[in-house]
Length: 296
Image 1 (cartoon, rainbow, N blue to C red):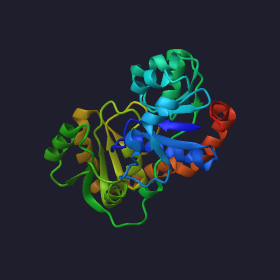
Image 2: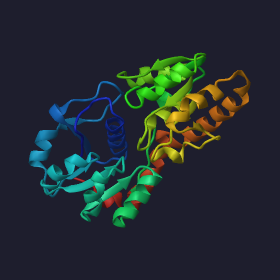
Image 3: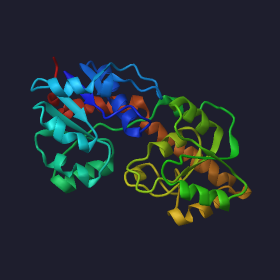
């Protein structure tokens, strides 16, 4: 059996990405379940994936099972089970380096920077499985408040507060601790999205905001620069310069620039639809993922 082993079901991007990937595998007829503490299912996004108890899975897993994981802290415990391991690389912190050096672990990467990192650190040729955003985020024609700037205060709240003091013409909307549907509706109504997560790995929120039709003004991130293209899909500025960048983009005379960024962002976001990742998964199966999975 195959299990995607997760540390919990809280509101974190890695949890949602894990469940989405498990669902894609299930849709591809892979015998699959997600293992969570207390066999809890997330309540903040829609999910139909079977859930089982993590403690029991770890206690009983053996050579006939495959355990997929993304949190590097889980590696020692899962390695001790003797099951086959697949590392679903969602970030490139040095904590993952021992995993990359373990040749018995199959490595999957979600974006280009992670693929490059695996090769640089351990000369590992990883399997590209891609990443996607939920269809719920794609703009559906809902009216927008062009003077509203959404942001997520969990990371970079001080940057957002600085922008709030600097740009008095905008209303700032914090999005935190809400369901995926509420988050998507908030982004669809907002004219801007302020990306403040310094050292972010990939940064799904900014990509989701592009899908929702927001003008994205963001700090540089680690892996997400493959979709954050300054002047084409977003306005990129260093943290100290972000308030001034937002002020510039929100000026009355910047309408054509905002429209261009919206169009570019929407086109970029369309490359990360779930349907696109489903096609990529078929290629990943042929590239070796199928052999790493359990089929009984």
